[in-house]
Length: 56
Ligand SMILES: [Zn+2]
Image (cartoon, rainbow, N blue to C red; front, top):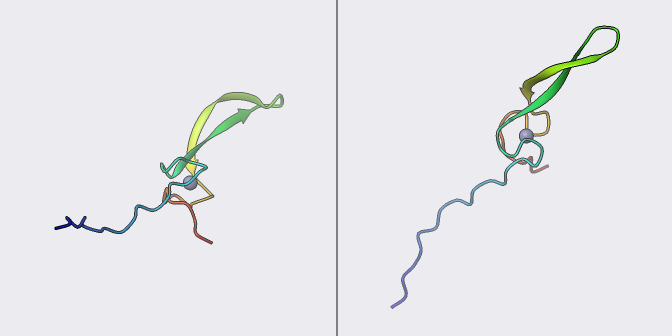
């Protein structure tokens, strides 16, 4: 008697850009020298913040 695994919907692949977090960090530049002052989290434009790899 075979034990049947309960099949669930496969987990969607994580976005390769944000690693599934839905956010990416952008380096913030200020001033004439475009000095980098830090990083700011922003919406991942690859998955639009869902954290899932787009299928199309
Ligand atoms: Zn993403």
